[in-house]
Length: 160
Image 1 (cartoon, rainbow, N blue to C red):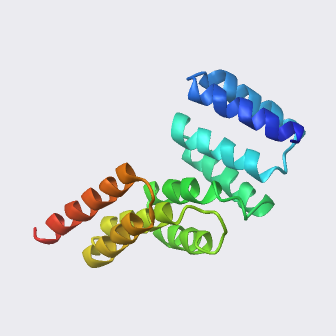
Image 2: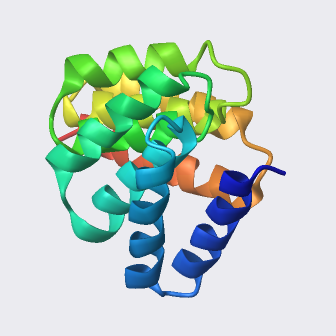
């Protein structure tokens, strides 16, 4: 395993244990040494988005990650979630469509994000369809129940 891969594992462990400042400091050090690493840029974007709420900086990190390594399956769900939260629906569709072409991207997560997109746009039928696809694709019972609950919520909204 390369040095950067080992350090990324350490960073992820720091994040899991709640040591956010240490993890972020390590990411910044690694970015100085490996600025072209797509996986590192994606993790940087994820931390900026999920832990700090720095949406513009996170979006730029995700863009760099896509330019550096557009085949990183971990990149797409996080990047799409960021764009979705920012209301950038056209960009969300482009990222999700690209994700469907990348091997190992968890398709159930992409279908669920399509569901969220259509739910936000009040396109109830499309949202229901995509939440159903997400439930069909997952192999995790808890995740399947969540997608089915999402589908039921949209069906209820449709009647309002």
